[in-house]
Amino acid sequence: MKSSGRFDVIVVGGGPSGSTMAWSLASRGISVAVIERSTFPREKVCGDFVEPAGLRIIDKMGCTEALDLGGRTAINKVRAYYGPHIAYQNEVAYYEGEMAMPPYGHVVPRDQLDTALLENAARAGASVFQGAAVKQVRRENGLMSVTTKTNKGTSELIAPVVVGADGVQSVVAAHAGLRRDDKKHIGISQRVYLEGVEMDESEACIWFDEDHYPGYGWVFPAGDGRANAGMGMLSETTERFDISLQKCFRESLDRLKFRHPSCANATMCSKPLGGAVHMYGGITRNHFAGGLLVGDAGGFVDPMTAEGITQGMESSIIGAKTIAEALERGRFEQADFARFDQDFRSYFDHGMLYLSFYATMMRNRHFGDFFLSMTQQGFERAQHDREFARLSGTGFGGLNVQPAAMAAQIWYGIARHILDGGKAVLADLLAGRGVPLDGFVGDWNLWQCGWRASVSADVGWHMDWLGDIVHAASKLGPSFTQKENPRLKGPFEMEFGS
Image (tube, rainbow, N blue to C red; front, side, top):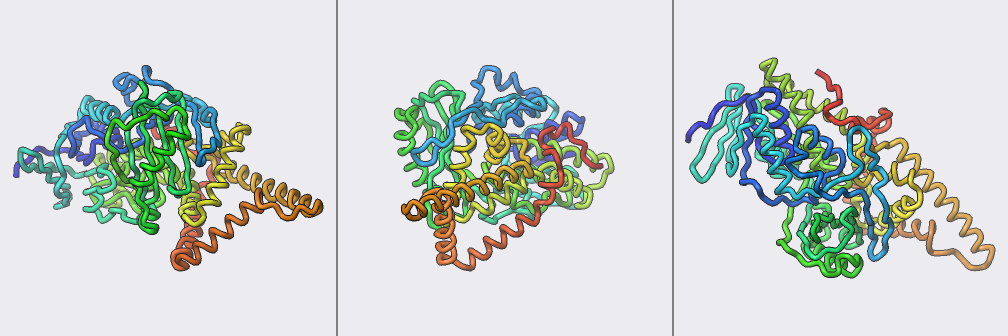
């Protein structure tokens, strides 16, 4: 085994979170190495959509020109299908262009995005090792040792700090005893590229079907008649109900050709690929003696949409400050990195815990008909109520999640739904028409059917699910005590503790 050098920090993983971490550290004059098992450019299972907050970070890092973002179509509209029904087709109401964010997103294929960000880290001074698989991570005498294997043999890198940015199967997380395997916090997906798509290139498409609940599908236009099409589901659900995600994906793509006229002539131009993500609700601890976990390795993924590019970059910018302070003090024990958990919690918890609460409720497949009905009604209301779309729509991918305002809107809507439903029932009874089976009564019936089915199928799991809801609700303090979502300002503007 040969030594490849001594560094201040070793970052394992060269995706957006790893590259952002390396750039942030190298820009401070810190000696940093990035170890990436693939050789870029390479494909990555992802929707490829970078929303406004991610574009803000990319611009701050100086990568806008390298990615030719000015030449890409701005996506600022969305179409939402519930089965064959279009529930929403309008602008993305919460893309408002505030706080240096553009009022749109871009589809940037990951082979292009990740390559540009890693090259940017190298320009900042990071040493990049591609095609190097990490075989072992260990800590001896206060130093971290990372053993890698390439087609030229094995090498060893040494540093006081290691950052795990190496995804779901993180070797660094395994070393620290922090690898997560709770399938109720793991999303799995299938993705393929299509050609022959004739859709509006400024409009994203998402779709919901009962056969892939809890989850959703997407079609994001990539320009020149191409699109990224995919589907994600909860890993726990596919295992409990013996569901083949691949089969669901194929069947949904076939149905999409009939439902979305612009996809009628679409054909696959790549092989379907599968991937997995760790959602925020499953985070326990992301620091350890000798380092941190960021990005997907740390579970920084939206629990409702499974979006993780922006969150991964944000986690790295936050973590770089903790690492810089540890290097300045020359202390690298677990307690010296605990600041990272405090800082990312103060940044993310406000919105993420609220979304995790709803994701926990919605993960019971037996209630699929009920929750699909409720969310469809939400999209339909958003179609004509812009303020509702602006606030509550952020639950499906917006940055400025405002739990108190969203809760007020939702509960007011529920109260009106019950009141209007009660009036309709009374009117029908007085007119001798009997009790209607739609509206509020229909939704109540869906809830009762879901409850009975869940209890009947597995009462133990049902009770555990209710316990998880109570546990998620008990964490909602930060969601309602802060008036403004800290993520709105972005990680560069936040003042974190020292």
